[in-house]
Picture 1 (spheres, rainbow, N blue to C red):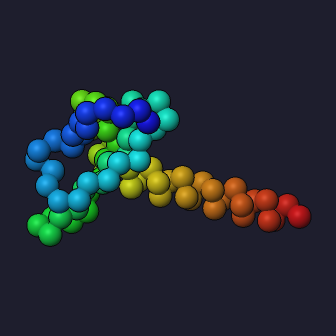
Picture 2 (picture 1 turned 45 degrees about the vertical axis):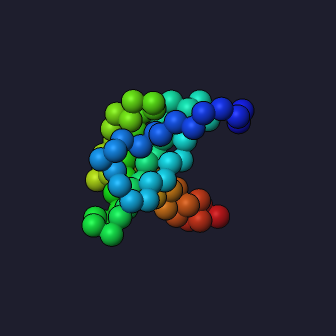
Length: 81
């Protein structure tokens, strides 16, 4: 990372704690926000415009679906030995 002027990524509407896991190409990120006034929320957003690509609820469904698929694959592998 080169030195330079810091730039705010998070829109002003998101107060509290904000965390980003930015993709290697810097075009998308997993965004999480939490504060004393709201529950933790997250989304997959495009950068730098912060457009929501996958909402938190949908993101949770995708994660659960991937976990179920991984579990099924590992069960099949265990059954084949």
